[in-house]
Image (cartoon, rainbow, N blue to C red; front, side, top):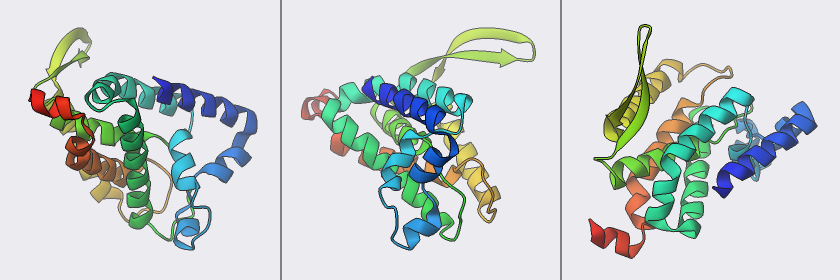
Length: 197
């Protein structure tokens, strides 16, 4: 998937450019509200806060993205992914317009992909590693259960941190991206995909 390749490439640029690179291309809500640096609403979705942030996001994108890309087609999927990321970033900016904390990451766009997945493939099962105390087991979990649980945790955490002006996870970006994906998925699907249902 080319989107994963672009994220990895930008992360290499981050490693080479350090903090100045991140501060230049991440979203700062006060800048957006003041009408400055609007391009960062797009660029921030390709920047990550570290290796674990990048790897975690790319695993989710790899797990859910290919099927959504097949349901749409590569060009529609790209437009959908970018639109989901933009909506997610704007949701985060609107939730804390006076924040000067840089916002970054592909999580909002990936949340849109997950929202589309639950609408497009509600009965699919995802291979998962189940950990119960010290026991490990690979099993298939209904995608709706996995994604539904994830979305519920995002909603609960968004409510818990809505007034906090510190860095951390952009829960409202996740919620905004997910809702966008679930609501608009059918609009981006290939016509023949719609008739298969």
